[in-house]
Amino acid sequence: MRAGAPSGLTGREFEAIADHARSAYLRYSFTKGTEQEVRFLVSALGLRPGHRVLDVGCGPGRHSHALRRLGVESVGVDVSASFLAAAGEGRWVRGDARCLPFVQGSFDAAISLCQGGFGLLGGRGEEAVVAGMARAVRRGGKLAVSGFSAYFAVRHLEEADTFDADTGVNHEVATVKDPAGRDGSFGLWTTCFTPREMRLMAAAAGVEVTGLWSVSPGDYAARPPDLDHPEFLLVGEVVD
Ligand SMILES: C[S@@+](CC[C@H](N)C(=O)[O-])C[C@H]1O[C@@H](n2cnc3c(N)ncnc32)[C@H](O)[C@@H]1O
Figure 1 (spheres, rainbow, N blue to C red):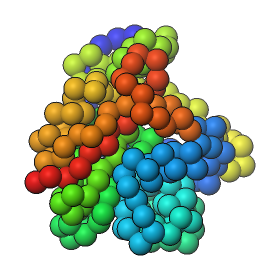
Figure 2: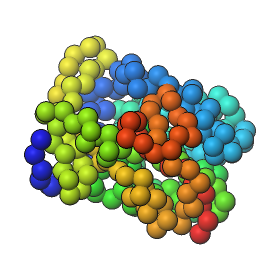
Figure 3: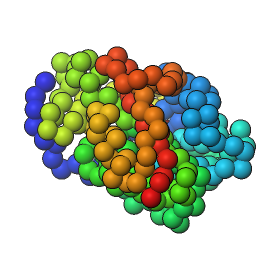
Figure 4: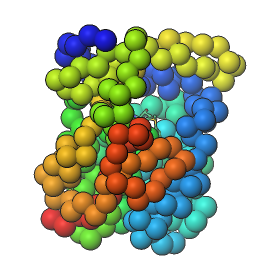
């Protein structure tokens, strides 16, 4: 482990990983809990058939697809053309989560899950993502954002990881498989958060936090923040 602020990052580093992984992304075990995650979110966000949800950093669209199966409309936005191509049928927009191109108040809810669009920016504009999501949602609408836990990251730091104590960004070299099973090596910068940081970001975006929970992929639950789960899930209501 070394300290040292990441430099030269653009916040679009994940694109190269997505270009390599494409549909193979959906073979990774952490994507297998989609139905449980969506069931939890439907209840936590009060989603009903006909509601419109913005899925920020949607990847190949697994949450959007699951929402649509429940009658909830979804528009996915992602920086990766490869992931959007892998997403298949649906409504997808290629774009950067930091400048969301949607009419103000045009969604009933916005989600950004599994670091999607929010947690892979390497400290380059996470606040803008939350603010843009809140802007796209009508007053009284809901937000759900997951971010990697800084506590968990430090507690389980691996020898090859570089955790920058200043920005909370963890760097690792990730080995990723393509659809043919070939390995590629990529730098992966994950921004890690404390619950307090997430609450402050939400407040600055005019979002009243109604829940901030410790979760794992496929095990979303209203569980108080702890040191034992890899992600925090913030749920809130747009009040401004
Ligand atoms: C780990 S994947 C999660 C995808 C999806 N939300 C899921 O749960 O499977 C992270 C996603 O964030 C997207 N992403 C990374 N940086 C982004 C940015 N600056 N703007 C929009 N999307 C971004 C990546 O392309 C990728 O699809």
